[in-house]
Length: 187
Image (cartoon, rainbow, N blue to C red; front, top):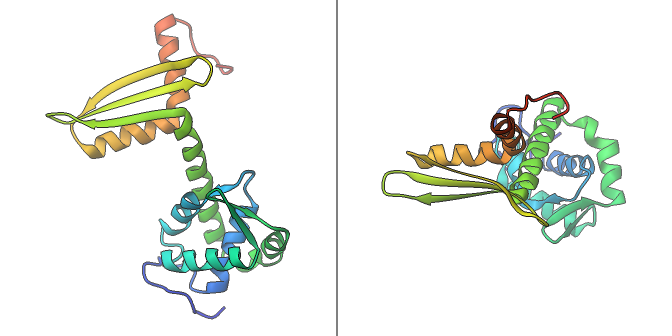
């Protein structure tokens, strides 16, 4: 395909064709079980230099305007015509790009989902940062909370991301330690 996309910031092997960027968008959204938040899609595709950010926004706008993608409440779904594009043309994309973008989108979408259940607040203190982590249940309220102090914002962000991704594992481990019950494969 012809190199007609903005190429600034694209890593080697990234997409340099506007039509390839549009195909990738349809492919990625078509392969998701749930609507894809716009910011999650943009982050997943542009963060590793797979496409140029401005090229991606342009492609998403064109796909939405043409009816291939549907944007509702900040989330994308794919229309029947977008599904056809994904089915017929996704094989034209490099496997490495499809794979990397798909993995990144799945991770970020799951991280986004978990961040609604697992709350983290970061607050600057005199000598560092206080990171308050909690797991809540809509009916029961707070189930688990933890506060740690770290020396830097970088460490606070690492704690935040790890808590969001591994809160269930942390809760199981802590309950096992506190109750004296050993973890089993089922726990």
